[in-house]
Length: 353
Image (cartoon, rainbow, N blue to C red):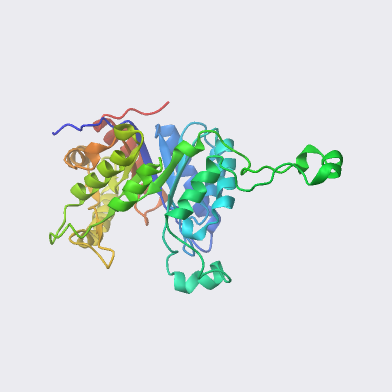
């Protein structure tokens, strides 16, 4: 088996947190139980996807606030918050609050771009300003500034001498977002799939989340571009533009389904799931030329061999493997147990304590 250039240091997982419209509480509770299980199994991090107007977690920051009170060690992340739906100043307040509640365990992944189906939701989301909203990197920069303590206003204190004399300390205004959470600024991640986004994240001192989707650029002219090589190029571009260089943090998020302890019924379901999704991996999809990585299913030894042969994986030392969207709670328990107990050790990882 080829050796990895970077030993696996951090093992995490990512979930979408699906729920039944008729019983949304049960779905959210299942997600919290999965995070608690992840901590018991020794995972280093748990990440939540973000879904709006769908039956998945629409408020991961709120769910992670709850998770912060039911765990003590595991890092908690968002992968990713689409900033087109957010006000950066208000989001900065929420993020700092949850980071403080968690004891400094929050990892915030964000992305830019117009909200999905923007023409259909803009009247509900931005009824008066839809045409003026800017959904590019500037939105991330504003969030970074607020989280890192840059002034949000030119005013602080209280209005006038009489107000200062009469009003208690609680009436004082700060020129920075409050609360401030030291260290959160260094735990901001950009979820990107293109060379441009990788370079921008590096230039602005962020960490980089790369997933099972990349964009095949115009230079990738092959009928079936190599996903792993494209991902590798993006990781190296990110680090070449980051102040920390080769030490800049990158996390990879492929869909990985170990079957070591799965029942025959579970194995059949997992293999069918992967088979249905495999055709989309053969060539770039849509105008954006999105290229999907094949899902990895099999026993841990088989998956480890495939990962060690993956050029993108060999370049990272932390991962957040994505759980399939549509499985049952007991499936996630089995997959997480095998990830921590079988696949992680096969990749050189040891559980956190």
